Image 1 (cartoon, rainbow, N blue to C red):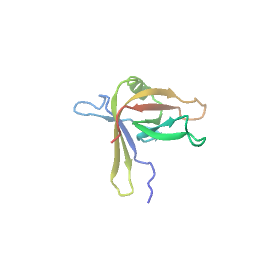
Image 2: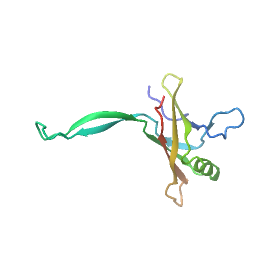
Image 3: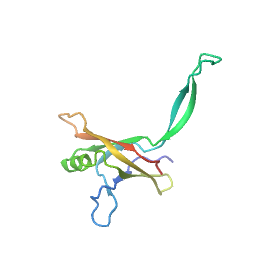
Image 4: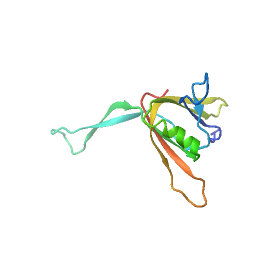
Length: 137
């Protein structure tokens, strides 16, 4: 049976978890994508091709990016702004259909932490994008 996202968490090792704690959960996340590796594609453009189609080849793997959206608070925005460009470990935990948790861990750095559109009658949100620097595990 498929699971809904309720119960999913994202933690980052930023030192804010207190003494003896390696990571702290980012609260009030509204949605997130999961870090996954991607395969780059290169084109082979030989002059002696037998037809007019480019040949595409699989290249090196790229660690990819992921993003998350959270409800704005000064504390969270300031905390995540302080991590811009600083390599950290991010841990995504999702509920599963078996009752256990599924975890994806990756190193990466925040490339943007931008406030979304401000509306008169809506919760103010921020979208944060993380560039992965190593293979997710």
